[in-house]
Length: 282
Length: 238
Image (tube, rainbow over all chains, first blue to last red; front, side, top):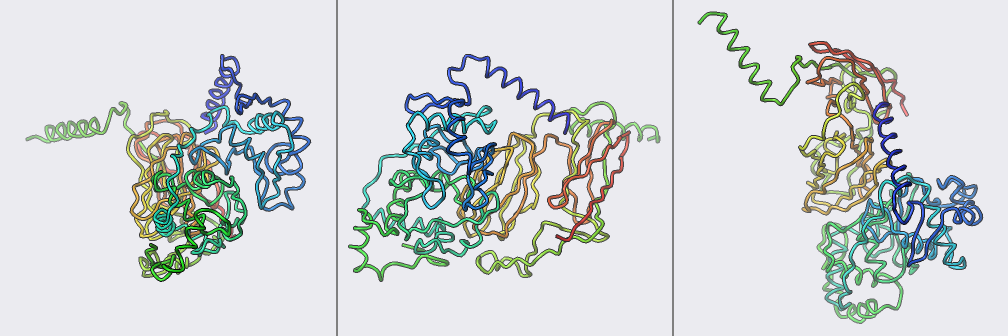
C-alpha cells in the first residue's frame, strides 16, 4: 500500500510538472467564464475577505461561522458540488461555479454575490478550484444537452405526473410535493448532516436556479453531495420536460403550467389516481 | 500399467490443468489462509423495520438485521476484506464484471470487492426505486436513481478506496465497495475464514479491513504451500 502510494504520488507529481511546464493556455487553477479570465492569486484576496468566515482558510467549509450554519458551508477540498450543468460524478464548469456564487443558495446562509464585480467573481472561481487536486487531474464534465422545451400542455403535465409517481419522487418530496415523503425525515447529506428535500409548496426558488431549464438540470444531473440522485439514466430527455411541467403545478406560483393545471383540475379531479404507494399515478 | 506410469500421467494432467489456468510462473503457487476473530464486545445488530417499503418487507419472513458487524461462532468476524497490499506484482484489472445487487432492500454482497478499473454492474432486483449513492472521497462521488426494472448501472473506480454505499430512499441500506489495487484478496465467510490462493513464494504485506473496526496489517511469508495468517480485531460495543 505504502509503496503504491509513493509511486502514485510520484506519478501524479510528474503529471503536475508536465501540466505546469506544458503549453496549456490555461493553468488548472485559473478560470474562464464567457471569455473573462480568472486569476487564483487575485481570487485569494477576495476569498479571504468575503468567503473565509464560512468556508474557512483551507476551503474545507470549517470557517468560524460554520458551527452555527445549517446547511453547512461547502467543503471545496472534496470538489463535490450541487449545482452543475454536468453529469453526476463530474466536476462543474467554471460558469456553473460562477452562477452559484452570483445566485447564492436560497434558504441557506450563502447570499447572492451579484454586488461583486464579474471579475472578482471569476477570480473567486479560479481560487476555489485550487482547493482540490481533482481540478488538475480531470477537467470539468461535459454539460448535458438540454433539448428545446416541449409545449407545456395538459398532456405533458399528466405524463410528468406519471413520472413523479413512477420515479418515486414522492418518497422524499411527498405526494403533494410538500417535502414530507416517507423517507424525508431520514435524509442526510454526504457528510451525515440532516438535510431536507425541497418543499415545492414553499414557492421558494430552487437552489440551482429558477427557470424551467434549471429545474430540468437539477433532476437530470442530480445535486451531488445530497440525497438527490441523477435521473439521466432513467428519464429520456424528451420526457424530462414533462416532469418539469408537472413540478411547476406543485408550486404556488403563477406559471403557465399552474394555470393550465388549475383550469383543468376542477372538472377532472375524480379521474386522478392519488400519488403514493401502490398507485399508478395517471 | 506400472505405478511409475500412473504417476507420470498424473503429473501430466496436473501440468495441463495448471497451464490451462493461465500463464502462471514456474514456482508452485502457494496461498495464505487464516481466520479473523475479535476480542471485546461487538455492537448489537438491530432489526431493520422495512414497513415503509412493503414490497421489500414481504421478501423477508424473518426480520433482516443490520450488517455492520456480522459475527460467527467462536468470536469470528465475517465481511472482513483481507488483501495483499505489498509484495505482489501489480497486474491489469480483471476483465470480469463484479455484480452488486439490491435485493429485498439489502445490498448483496454487503461488501463488493473490485479491482481498480474493473467493471462494476449494479442491479435493482426489487419492485421499488433505489438510488445508488456511493460516498466516494478519493474517487468521484455520484448518485443515480434506479427505478424498478431499469438496466444495471455500470461504473468503474480509478483509485483504491473503501467506499460506503447508501440508498437515500431506504436509509437502512448500507454496503461497501472495496476498490483494491490487487487481485489477491479474500472476504471472510460466516465463520471468519479466508483463503487467498495462487500466490507465488515471497514476502507479502497483508491488510485486513473491517468497516467498523478499521484495519490490521501483517507481514506474511509464503513458501511453497499455504501460509497462515490470523487477525484479531478489538471490538467496541458502540
